[in-house]
Image 1 (cartoon, rainbow, N blue to C red):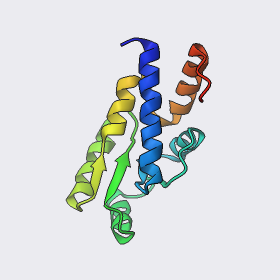
Image 2: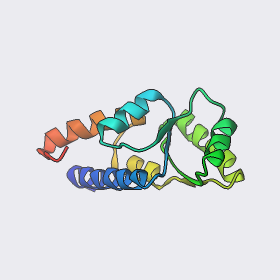
Image 3: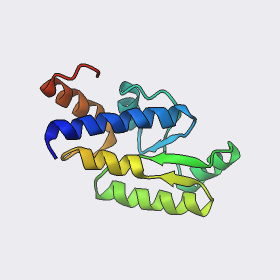
Length: 135
């Protein structure tokens, strides 16, 4: 797939992520820099950084709040993949649906991106390269 087509697909994924998040589906990320990157991309809904909180506590709070679905955006490195597995096991054991499709699609349409905190800069740089002014 050509680089500019991947970028267009990535932007579509981000727009869909914004929409799903605007419907009240929280995004689970690792840290506050991930939150900042997503905010710069225009995502305004609930984003929950969980690196400093035990996963089971996050799940319990979600259940208390009546939240039954989340979007998972952990980093793409080995540690992020392992963290994602742990989150999925814990959340799904408590009947919280974990949407992994955005994480998978972002990995698919970015080349060499290792973490969510770099997503904004990745898109900004590539949009400048291709003169896409929507961002």
